[in-house]
Amino acid sequence: MKRLIFIVLVMGLLGACQQDLDTYSGVDYIYFEGTQDSVFFSYAYVDGEVQSDSMWVWVRMSGQVTDYDREIKLKVAETNGRPGEDYVALAETYTLEKGYTFVAIPVVLLRPEILKKEERYLVLELQENADFRLMWPSQPVNQATDKRYSKVRYKIVYSEILNTPPKGWYDTYFGTFSVKKLDKMCQELNMTRVLFDDVTYVNPRKEYIATKMVKILNAAPVYEDDGVTPMRMGDMYYQ
Image (cartoon, rainbow, N blue to C red):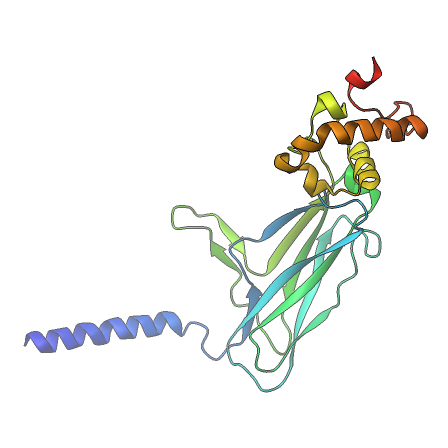
Protein backbone atom coordinates (compact mmCIF):
# COMPACT_ATOMS: atom_id res chain seq x y z
CA MET A 1 0.00 0.00 0.00
CA LYS A 2 2.78 2.40 0.94
CA ARG A 3 4.53 1.60 -2.34
CA LEU A 4 1.34 2.36 -4.29
CA ILE A 5 0.94 5.73 -2.54
CA PHE A 6 4.58 6.57 -3.28
CA ILE A 7 4.15 5.75 -6.98
CA VAL A 8 1.00 7.89 -7.19
CA LEU A 9 2.78 10.84 -5.56
CA VAL A 10 5.77 10.55 -7.90
CA MET A 11 3.53 10.36 -10.96
CA GLY A 12 1.64 13.41 -9.73
CA LEU A 13 4.86 15.41 -9.30
CA LEU A 14 6.09 14.38 -12.73
CA GLY A 15 2.79 15.44 -14.23
CA ALA A 16 2.99 18.84 -12.53
CA CYS A 17 6.56 19.36 -13.73
CA GLN A 18 5.57 18.35 -17.25
CA GLN A 19 2.71 20.87 -17.17
CA ASP A 20 5.12 23.68 -16.18
CA LEU A 21 7.70 22.78 -18.82
CA ASP A 22 5.23 22.39 -21.69
CA THR A 23 3.84 25.94 -21.49
CA TYR A 24 5.42 26.90 -24.83
CA SER A 25 5.49 23.43 -26.35
CA GLY A 26 5.89 23.54 -30.12
CA VAL A 27 6.49 27.31 -30.25
CA ASP A 28 9.85 28.83 -31.18
CA TYR A 29 10.37 32.17 -29.43
CA ILE A 30 13.17 34.66 -28.76
CA TYR A 31 14.20 36.83 -25.84
CA PHE A 32 17.08 38.98 -24.62
CA GLU A 33 19.64 37.03 -22.60
CA GLY A 34 20.52 38.20 -19.08
CA THR A 35 18.94 39.25 -15.81
CA GLN A 36 18.40 42.94 -16.57
CA ASP A 37 16.81 45.01 -19.32
CA SER A 38 19.17 47.99 -19.34
CA VAL A 39 22.87 48.80 -19.27
CA PHE A 40 24.99 51.95 -18.94
CA PHE A 41 28.20 52.54 -20.85
CA SER A 42 30.63 55.40 -20.17
CA TYR A 43 33.37 56.80 -22.37
CA ALA A 44 34.74 58.63 -19.31
CA TYR A 45 37.83 56.45 -18.92
CA VAL A 46 38.21 55.42 -22.54
CA ASP A 47 41.16 56.98 -24.35
CA GLY A 48 40.16 60.18 -26.12
CA GLU A 49 41.26 58.93 -29.53
CA VAL A 50 38.73 56.08 -29.46
CA GLN A 51 35.70 57.32 -31.39
CA SER A 52 33.45 54.26 -31.22
CA ASP A 53 32.87 51.16 -29.15
CA SER A 54 30.60 48.14 -29.43
CA MET A 55 28.16 46.67 -26.97
CA TRP A 56 27.09 43.09 -27.61
CA VAL A 57 23.44 42.30 -27.08
CA TRP A 58 22.62 38.60 -26.86
CA VAL A 59 19.37 37.23 -28.23
CA ARG A 60 18.51 33.64 -27.40
CA MET A 61 16.04 31.26 -28.99
CA SER A 62 13.92 28.68 -27.21
CA GLY A 63 12.39 25.89 -29.22
CA GLN A 64 13.52 23.67 -32.04
CA VAL A 65 17.11 23.85 -33.32
CA THR A 66 16.96 23.73 -37.10
CA ASP A 67 19.31 22.74 -39.91
CA TYR A 68 18.58 25.98 -41.79
CA ASP A 69 19.11 29.69 -41.06
CA ARG A 70 16.34 31.80 -39.57
CA GLU A 71 15.85 35.54 -39.12
CA ILE A 72 15.56 37.54 -35.90
CA LYS A 73 13.74 40.84 -36.33
CA LEU A 74 14.78 43.84 -34.25
CA LYS A 75 13.99 47.55 -34.20
CA VAL A 76 15.06 50.71 -32.37
CA ALA A 77 11.84 51.45 -30.53
CA GLU A 78 13.04 54.64 -28.81
CA THR A 79 16.13 56.85 -28.95
CA ASN A 80 17.26 60.43 -28.44
CA GLY A 81 20.17 59.92 -30.83
CA ARG A 82 20.63 59.87 -34.57
CA PRO A 83 22.01 57.00 -36.65
CA GLY A 84 25.32 57.96 -38.20
CA GLU A 85 25.93 60.65 -35.57
CA ASP A 86 25.37 58.96 -32.21
CA TYR A 87 25.31 55.29 -33.19
CA VAL A 88 25.68 53.10 -36.25
CA ALA A 89 22.30 52.22 -37.73
CA LEU A 90 21.18 48.70 -36.89
CA ALA A 91 19.89 46.19 -39.40
CA GLU A 92 16.22 45.22 -39.35
CA THR A 93 17.05 41.51 -39.22
CA TYR A 94 19.90 39.34 -37.95
CA THR A 95 20.59 35.75 -38.90
CA LEU A 96 20.29 32.89 -36.45
CA GLU A 97 22.52 30.36 -38.14
CA LYS A 98 21.49 26.75 -38.44
CA GLY A 99 22.32 24.63 -35.41
CA TYR A 100 22.60 27.68 -33.11
CA THR A 101 20.33 28.92 -30.31
CA PHE A 102 21.68 32.46 -29.92
CA VAL A 103 22.83 35.54 -31.82
CA ALA A 104 25.27 38.20 -30.59
CA ILE A 105 24.21 41.57 -32.03
CA PRO A 106 26.83 44.36 -32.07
CA VAL A 107 25.52 47.83 -31.20
CA VAL A 108 28.16 50.37 -32.24
CA LEU A 109 28.08 53.50 -30.07
CA LEU A 110 29.74 56.58 -31.56
CA ARG A 111 31.39 59.34 -29.56
CA PRO A 112 30.12 62.79 -30.56
CA GLU A 113 31.10 65.84 -28.49
CA ILE A 114 27.56 66.09 -27.09
CA LEU A 115 28.22 63.03 -24.91
CA LYS A 116 30.34 65.23 -22.63
CA LYS A 117 27.15 67.12 -21.73
CA GLU A 118 24.21 64.82 -22.46
CA GLU A 119 23.37 61.13 -22.31
CA ARG A 120 22.22 59.21 -25.35
CA TYR A 121 20.07 56.10 -25.25
CA LEU A 122 18.65 53.37 -27.45
CA VAL A 123 15.75 51.05 -26.66
CA LEU A 124 15.93 47.86 -28.70
CA GLU A 125 12.79 45.81 -29.17
CA LEU A 126 12.43 42.30 -30.54
CA GLN A 127 9.73 41.75 -33.16
CA GLU A 128 7.70 38.70 -34.11
CA ASN A 129 8.08 37.26 -37.59
CA ALA A 130 7.42 34.04 -39.48
CA ASP A 131 10.25 32.30 -37.60
CA PHE A 132 9.78 33.42 -34.00
CA ARG A 133 7.14 34.51 -31.51
CA LEU A 134 7.53 36.62 -28.36
CA MET A 135 6.27 34.30 -25.63
CA TRP A 136 8.34 35.57 -22.67
CA PRO A 137 7.62 39.30 -22.23
CA SER A 138 9.06 39.79 -18.74
CA GLN A 139 10.66 38.14 -15.74
CA PRO A 140 10.40 38.86 -11.98
CA VAL A 141 13.51 40.54 -10.55
CA ASN A 142 13.35 38.21 -7.55
CA GLN A 143 10.82 36.42 -5.36
CA ALA A 144 10.66 39.26 -2.82
CA THR A 145 9.25 41.90 -5.18
CA ASP A 146 6.63 42.36 -7.87
CA LYS A 147 9.08 44.33 -10.01
CA ARG A 148 9.83 42.75 -13.36
CA TYR A 149 12.37 43.30 -16.14
CA SER A 150 11.62 42.99 -19.83
CA LYS A 151 12.83 40.08 -21.94
CA VAL A 152 11.84 41.72 -25.25
CA ARG A 153 13.00 45.34 -24.73
CA TYR A 154 16.57 46.36 -23.90
CA LYS A 155 17.81 49.89 -23.11
CA ILE A 156 21.38 51.10 -23.65
CA VAL A 157 22.38 54.41 -22.06
CA TYR A 158 25.79 55.97 -22.73
CA SER A 159 27.67 59.22 -22.19
CA GLU A 160 31.05 60.79 -21.52
CA ILE A 161 29.91 62.89 -18.59
CA LEU A 162 32.65 62.89 -15.97
CA ASN A 163 31.76 64.72 -12.76
CA THR A 164 34.60 63.46 -10.61
CA PRO A 165 38.34 63.11 -11.35
CA PRO A 166 40.00 59.70 -11.66
CA LYS A 167 41.44 58.10 -8.53
CA GLY A 168 44.99 59.05 -9.50
CA TRP A 169 44.28 62.77 -9.86
CA TYR A 170 46.22 65.02 -7.45
CA ASP A 171 45.02 68.64 -7.39
CA THR A 172 48.28 69.80 -5.79
CA TYR A 173 50.22 68.62 -8.84
CA PHE A 174 47.64 68.65 -11.67
CA GLY A 175 45.42 71.58 -10.65
CA THR A 176 41.65 71.75 -11.08
CA PHE A 177 40.29 68.74 -12.91
CA SER A 178 38.70 68.93 -16.36
CA VAL A 179 38.09 66.29 -18.99
CA LYS A 180 39.87 68.44 -21.58
CA LYS A 181 42.96 68.66 -19.38
CA LEU A 182 42.92 64.91 -18.72
CA ASP A 183 42.80 64.20 -22.45
CA LYS A 184 45.56 66.72 -23.14
CA MET A 185 47.79 65.02 -20.56
CA CYS A 186 47.02 61.61 -22.05
CA GLN A 187 47.87 62.86 -25.53
CA GLU A 188 51.14 64.57 -24.58
CA LEU A 189 52.43 61.87 -22.23
CA ASN A 190 51.26 58.81 -24.17
CA MET A 191 48.98 57.74 -21.31
CA THR A 192 45.36 56.62 -21.11
CA ARG A 193 42.45 57.61 -18.91
CA VAL A 194 42.53 54.14 -17.40
CA LEU A 195 46.11 54.72 -16.20
CA PHE A 196 45.02 57.92 -14.45
CA ASP A 197 42.47 55.86 -12.54
CA ASP A 198 45.28 53.67 -11.19
CA VAL A 199 46.76 55.26 -8.05
CA THR A 200 49.65 52.82 -7.90
CA TYR A 201 50.73 53.90 -11.39
CA VAL A 202 50.26 57.66 -11.05
CA ASN A 203 51.52 58.25 -7.51
CA PRO A 204 55.25 57.66 -8.14
CA ARG A 205 55.03 59.61 -11.42
CA LYS A 206 52.87 62.58 -10.41
CA GLU A 207 55.73 65.09 -10.06
CA TYR A 208 57.22 64.12 -13.43
CA ILE A 209 53.79 64.33 -15.09
CA ALA A 210 53.10 67.78 -13.65
CA THR A 211 56.51 69.34 -14.45
CA LYS A 212 56.42 67.93 -17.98
CA MET A 213 52.97 69.37 -18.59
CA VAL A 214 53.99 72.78 -17.19
CA LYS A 215 56.73 72.99 -19.84
CA ILE A 216 54.35 71.90 -22.60
CA LEU A 217 51.63 74.38 -21.63
CA ASN A 218 54.10 77.23 -21.19
CA ALA A 219 55.44 76.59 -24.69
CA ALA A 220 51.99 76.28 -26.30
CA PRO A 221 49.15 77.63 -24.10
CA VAL A 222 45.80 75.83 -24.18
CA TYR A 223 42.46 77.12 -22.89
CA GLU A 224 39.75 75.19 -21.13
CA ASP A 225 36.35 74.68 -22.74
CA ASP A 226 35.18 78.19 -21.77
CA GLY A 227 37.86 79.63 -24.07
CA VAL A 228 39.03 81.99 -21.31
CA THR A 229 40.64 79.96 -18.54
CA PRO A 230 44.25 78.95 -19.31
CA MET A 231 44.96 75.27 -18.76
CA ARG A 232 47.51 74.90 -15.98
CA MET A 233 48.89 72.48 -13.45
CA GLY A 234 48.88 72.89 -9.67
CA ASP A 235 49.39 76.37 -8.19
CA MET A 236 52.72 75.30 -6.66
CA TYR A 237 54.30 75.51 -10.14
CA TYR A 238 53.33 79.15 -10.70
CA GLN A 239 54.59 80.85 -7.55
